[in-house]
Length: 263
Length: 263
Image (cartoon, chains in turn brown, orange):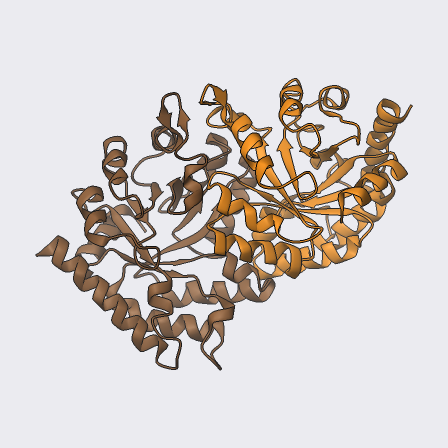
């Protein structure tokens, strides 16, 4: 999916919601298997969101069977949503190329999250595929962000060095950045370095980040945000009405987005 | 596998060779499938090495089928070698726990490589499993290491900050570090910070690192090294004698190790 297509979807649906398909095998409602769960969640949230983001860990724990479920889930989503393989990959060049082929060709995703630690030749293979995207970790929403990301490199926090360098390798047409909602005021700092890139923002919902703060500090002329919610949507109800509850929570978020950005 | 068991294997076989099972689907000899190739390589190198390290990228590109091959490969190796899932994972705590279960329980590996960018809660789940190991990226062997790993944090290169912090979260009984052979003199710097930890050293062989330099700067009282070679062993011959050629190359490396360390 191209940048223009993504922006069009966002304005069409008045939403920049990404639903995180972190489908925890231990949290499935009684009698519901993982693929059935995913399909029901997708059907219930389709109209309210523009992206889906399965996190690989929850699928890989089931081995080959998990990969089959992931593959079928991506196929079920179709081409009217931006798909993100949240895999946080990154390796030496030749190996990263295989990871890129895995997520873009074998699974057919639009994008994959990438860990920047190993530098340029670990990131570049992900931005060589037309219409495909690398979403590079910059400032994550977890407590461990303090350990390295916020540590100072050349008088600046490491995440800024990551934004600066990585944005020079690709463009806003093939690269996005992960910036957590749990530190929304830092989105203003991020926008000074990458005014035009899309940002994938986790941490709204179960992790406590505020949507209006994220928009206030992170929005650009194209909206430029994909705000992810996982647990607050997937587990809105643990009963047999899980899909209905997920749909209602996604709708609530979409309406909040519409109110903040389009009204 | 415990530290004591690994050290015993090393002295028994007079080898600290790790064979990297980076089995590239595009480089298989005519008429040989991936699992048959792996089994033949394992049979030909078993006596000369102490560890096997499949890199996940080459398996994931085949989707569910690749995971089956990986699973069967790990099972075929058995319990007389240390197994490393070279997966470079790392995510927020709950998600990293699922990755740890994937590699330690679903696949049955002894260890997994971990990217440190997201900090403490992304690494700790991997060191909570008795007899299992996190092998954390510190200074990798690729050109991109210059971008962030060798960038200065608090007046020191980032990789030193990684060594210092990560080594304080676990111990030499559950944590190792990746340090590339392409900068062997830096192994002396590494040893000042982590004198007792095992180091996984890629970059000898096809990438040009020297074994004697690695031993000179990186060895400790327990040897403390796992030196990886992938392409130079796997593709020693591209013909039907590939296993024989791989065995001969592994034997050559084991003999060089024996000469340097045990004679």
